[in-house]
Length: 146
Image (cartoon, rainbow, N blue to C red; front, side):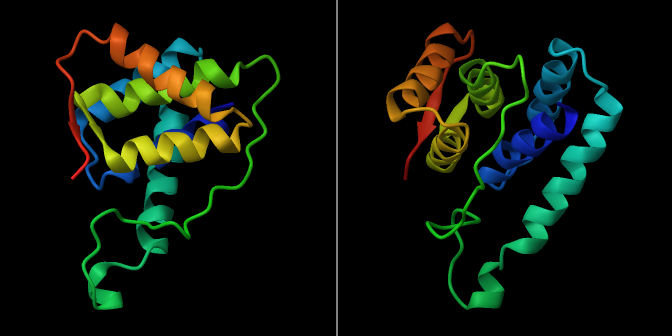
């Protein structure tokens, strides 16, 4: 479960090109919520973030502006949700991570949809997960869909 959660947390943290303290704090809370080893989880997240950052060409390498860090060609393989884990609940957890800074960026919403699809969830369930988290958030929420 540490590998599964760490991998999917890293996608959310990477999506908007901002890896913030609030995201690390929320990631730690998620590991503790699921009774997982945070130190191991942090290492998994750091390793995956490095792979994601190194694996996507930067704007300089392609000679064009890179505003999202990835594009429509970026693929996430179908994920096997661990036994006893509810895919909808995990997606809500990941949505909460994306909202930890009070901002839902276009790239984070897109990544949540990609992850939800990889978990086998429908578009409606993916949207419901994000909406539930946003409506229950104590933070003032902004969106940046520019």
